[in-house]
Amino acid sequence: MLDTASEDSVAEFYQQQGEMLEGFNEMDALAERGFVPGMSKEEKEKLARSETTAIRLSNVANMFLFAAKVYASVRSGSLAIIASTLDSLLDLLSGFILWFTAFSMQTPNPYQYPIGKKRMQPLGILVFASVMATLGLQIILESVRTLISDDNGFNLTKEQEEWVVGIMLSVTFVKLVLVLYCRSFTNEIVKAYAQDHFFDVITNVIGLVAALLANYFSDWLDPLGAIILALYTIRTWSLTVLENVNSLVGKSAAPEYLQKLTYLCWNHHKAIRHIDTVRAYTFGSHYFVEVDIVLPAGMPLQEAHDIGESLQVKLELLPEIERAFVHLDYEYTHKPEHTQAHH
Image (cartoon, rainbow, N blue to C red; front, side, top):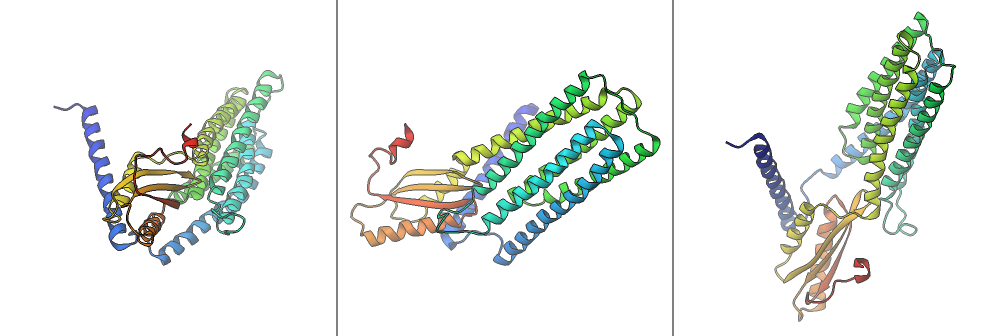
């Protein structure tokens, strides 16, 4: 009998094969019908309006919830809750950053930005994540200073405790609802909001638990909770920074996606004799694609041009591709183009 690890490997293999076949079927449909099966124009517009609503709702919620947490911080004086409130302040800043990047991407300027502004999206998320990681470091420094100082007195009255618990639990519930709502979208900016809301759920719980433990047991638990919160902040947003750096520096697409593109190119026209190069690399949240196809040496320029242009159009119909470049050649024994890039 196969052990559990072998069964998992077999299941994963068949899942990958199924996804590959599905991708090839999509390429067949694009090659034969000239369009990618998917949402209609009306459905895309409806989805875009829903994404805009999610962003606006998140920004409005962040403003009201920040005001509530400021009040909780004033009533409690807890360093962990204050750290959580400062995080909410940055939510407002990050919300503006993400809104600005979304707005900029929707207002193209082909003269000043001839290849579009898709890199605005990961750049905005990168700035957002960097600010969040910096906040985490500041919280750690302040918490350490509080731990080594003698002024660690922390005590909540019964009324203060009720207010703080009520506010923090209410804020956490609203944020949890926003997490579930924003995660239903595929847009990267809305998903960044979902990650931010989920982070708020974690920080709110840590802040509240640390404040209550410090109130009932020992004062040092409050700054300790703030340090744990800050370390979580730094780890979470450092991973986000690394992910978006890859999308800005032009990381290659996965081999499975390159296989789909190669399949589409090979089945594009019967005159294609060879496929010399297929590259796809990140350009913001989308891909740039470079394809080098080999056509008969004696083919008229007009016919060759039409084959290359129609392949470019097909490639750019794929939702993941920002721009496609098709190079025509008559042989494939020469050195690769742009050899300086391979040094």
